[in-house]
Amino acid sequence: DLAALAPLLGLTAVATALGTLAVFAVPAIYPALRLGAGGLVAEGAAALLTIGLPSAAMGALFSHLIQAAKGPRGGIGRALAANTAGGAIAPLAVGILLIPSLGVVAGLVVLSAVYAAGSLALLARPGARALPRAALALAGPAVLAALFAGPFDWRLVRPPAGGTVLAHVEGVAASASVVAEPGGHRHLRVNGTYTMGGTASYALDRIQGHLALLQHPAPRRALFLGVGTGATLASGARWPGLEVVGVDLSPEVLELIDAFPAVARDLSQSAGLRTGAADARRYVRAAEGSYDLILADNYHPAKDGAALLYTVEHYRAIRARLAPGGVAVQWLPLHQLDLAGLRLITRTFLEVFPGARLHMGNYNLVTPILALVARPGEGPPRLGDWVGRQMPDDLVAELRSIRFDSPFALAGGFLAGPEALTEFAGPGPLNTDDHPRLLFEAPETVYRALAPAAERLLTLVRDLPRLPRQAVDFGPEAGAFGIRLERYWQARDAFLTLGASVNVTGTVNHDARLLAPPLIEIVRHAPDFRPAYDPVLSMARRVAATEPQYAMNLLEGLDGAHPDRADARRLRAEIARVAGLSN
Image 1 (cartoon, rainbow, N blue to C red):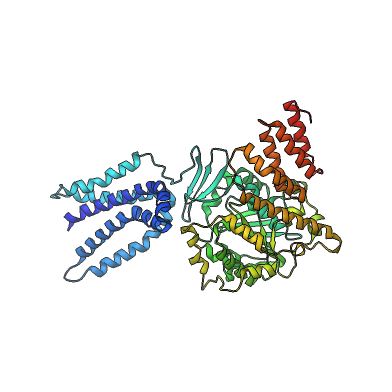
Image 2: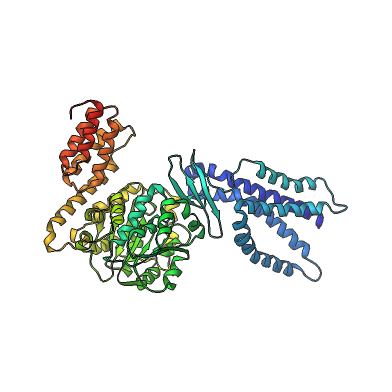
């Protein structure tokens, strides 16, 4: 029935175009839906708005065509066969060719235009009834015209107010964008929403690489699973004679590394660094040779497929690929995990690496990251491998720039040795390929509100017993180091507890009175703990604009707490000179 087919094709064109328009509306209404009705309802509403109408229209069109194919000699089977063949060709035609060539939105527009063109072609036949079916058929081009004329960014990336999209790539695996923020920082965003690092986290990304590399006395080959912006991978550029391979599942992500100049410079100047697009699990099994270090980056466990990078089978493949004395490091985003998920991953990791230890990568209460560190057949790193290590000047300078140039900074994030970690993980099931529990449990952390990450971090700090000799093998002659390290840990724990307990207002003079005195006491307790010293300097510099005498008093207390460091004295003299006060 060609008379009925024309409006059905028009209806499908309209529905596809309206679903495309809804794609632009969903980011604006999704947060309110999630806040009011919860994550699952918000996801369902978003899906209904974008694909509900097109699915219904296509279903009606399919039913009509199936009925039209029916005849005395059959025909429905042939129609279903043709539809199945089309369904087999569609992923290649749309997912592999159309979307990477034109983008998601332009690809949807093309599909809508094809439906509209079919409807108009049928209406142009002699004797076709033009009204009212013509109006429905013509509605498709009208909605398409609105898409072209409207103020829509077809890249589906919403930069922050005052920000811009610097680069955008759409491909088979994902869409990836580099977004510039108003303050000058830029970050990598995947599929329009998921942020994978940027210039603001550059120091932390470098620490992830250096902490792992410093666990080995002389690394020569390293494999980094996950590249992102490339900043962690680029940490290997300063290590002499080091060959580093970085693999990422998304070639689109690798295409955008040049948008991060510091990383691109390191990659271009170091012959030992190279990247490639590959599935991490397959690459570990198929790669030739062995590695002194295999570093697994932060994988959001609720993202599609990421849970399979935390399985026993994958960790066994990693262990088999390690050279004698090799190191395996698994970074974990604690802010994206609940304690049950952390225990499951830890238990699974310990199944393959029973001597593993747990470290903190940063002292951030909002986005803390952890590292499971394994040295199969080896104990903790030797202090002599850190203190007496010969390093080129540029590596020393980089470690100093990220405040990672002392053995206290390196061992200061230690949380638990094998025994304490095993007790924390407890008995229970493992995450395996056959029973990927994390795959089904982790999404719950996305759809329900997680407690603040600070609570989980402080729970670990409070409940995990640790001993200096579990963190570092410092030998019988270096007992003083163990005492200083224990004081460093006490200062670290007090620093984190202070950050979680004080309500910072953003008013620097008020906040300085709340934070500076306890921070100075933390410095007095453990002068090696730099993270408490530097914020007092910063607050004093800002307070000096309105209360120079109070700023000088803070710096006098800071200098008394750590007289071996001259920064407070220098700043105090500078403020006194500018304000005309007596130093």
